[in-house]
Image 1 (spheres, rainbow, N blue to C red):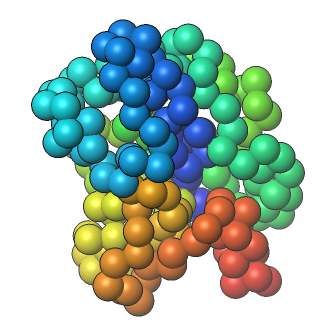
Image 2 (image 1 turned 180 degrees about the vertical axis):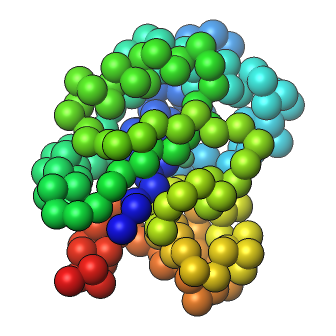
Amino acid sequence: MNIGIDVDGTLADMMPGTLQVLENETGINVRLEDYTSWTYLQDTYNFDSAEVLGFMDEAWLQGLVTLLEPGIQVPLHAIHKRDSTITIITQRTRPSHWIMTKWLLDNGIPYDALVFSTGLNKMDYPIDVLIDDSPFQADVMDRYPDKVLYSLAQTWNVPKIPAKNVVYIKSVTEALGIIERGAR
Ligand SMILES: [Mg+2]
């Protein structure tokens, strides 16, 4: 089993830091519970995507990113030790590549490959399943009938019309449990 896992919003809790950077740099205060859309800052405050990505890079560079699920290393190591490979697939932008890589190491996240993806859909990489918080990933899953998306619930990612290869989950731990039970 080749397991793909996203970083931002899936392994990493980077919204509190991003909103802190936003407030420090612009004075705009956004509460996490208001962040109900992937493009909330663009839609509400007319930032362009590059500016929003810049706030996210700054959150990483200022060390404001924590594990979304403390202790997630334990089930990740357990599944990795059996017979799964783990591919970290992220669209993290270049200024924070180095610190995100260090973060994975410092947090003891096991993986076999690290992909900084641009252009390709994450499902195009050689993975069997993907754990991701993107609200858009579910939309393309009919193109990948042999693969499964574990779509992580976030304020910006609420369940849509179910597809047969999309499983909405409340945590990465939950997804790993389902994958393990299926693999036995
Ligand atoms: Mg993400």
